[in-house]
Image (cartoon, rainbow, N blue to C red):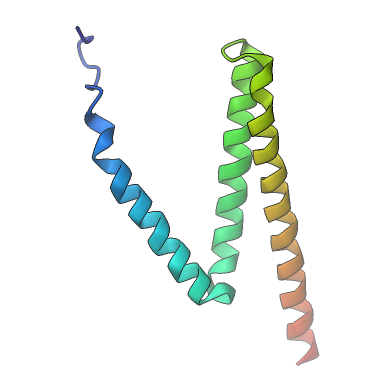
Length: 101
């Protein structure tokens, strides 16, 4: 029996295919015009990857998850840092290219 006010377990299932389609559309748009979307995609990716990693690490620190569950968040954090460095390098290249013209 479900608690009063709690959503049923089937509530989120309909939104998942829509979310997948949205992400695929965003990826297709980004790949088609990288210079236009890079300033938006990189910060969003950094926040998403690093934020999710830190939340999962927090669950391990709180004792909700076992210590062996730190592998995936560590990889997420490294990927977020890679995105950050990539974005910073691309931004610097953009600035230097603008000064040369």
